[in-house]
Image (cartoon, rainbow, N blue to C red; front, side):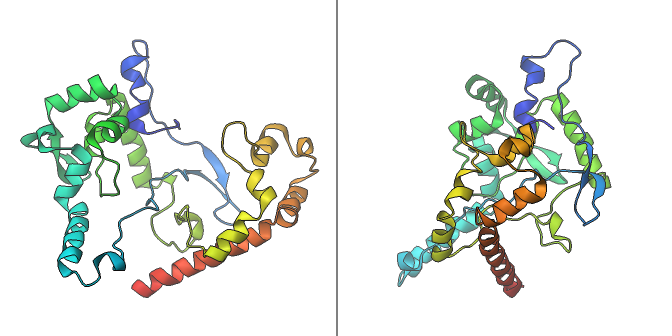
Length: 275
């Protein structure tokens, strides 16, 4: 239930807590989630690792008529998704790894970090793997990565909490979205960016009230947050139905949803043609 990655947050066990205290991930609470019209009381999390929307690509213009250049670009992308490339972007150079030593992580043998790596993790990154990887390893490109390094520098209390969560997920005690198109779309992890056209984007950009009243930045307006904090009447809306009608009509919510649903259907059609 904490607000960031297990590794970064459970560092509090090593830096802030008193003797005998533990700070760890815990079971998400039971709540009524509407995965069906009737709803279901269950433990559910919609916060899930997903596929990022950026990636590698090769422009036709950049390699047209130059087979050697095309093969070089393809080799780079092949390396990005190879086992060696995964380890490089997860661990850094070979000096950061103990030669010949591995451990089992998610059913696969992965390298053990070198002693100097752990020292640098703390002296440069204050134990925070994410910042260390970004600032000192340069591990920000869209390569395949493993959490094996991150796991090794997670506090023991963090590992304890993560193990309980993993067991609960394996048993189905906690439900979550899947990186797949599921029969019940509630459990489908939908990309944060959909393939809208230039004309669609122009239309979406023109929904001024919709765009300004649901902001996420500091000091900006967010009607949804205001309703949660103060109720519908504080926003001048008498009921959920009145609020929904206002968003649908006055804020162009229906047109917005139509554009997004068409883009989603086109994305599904595209992936079906690849099978």
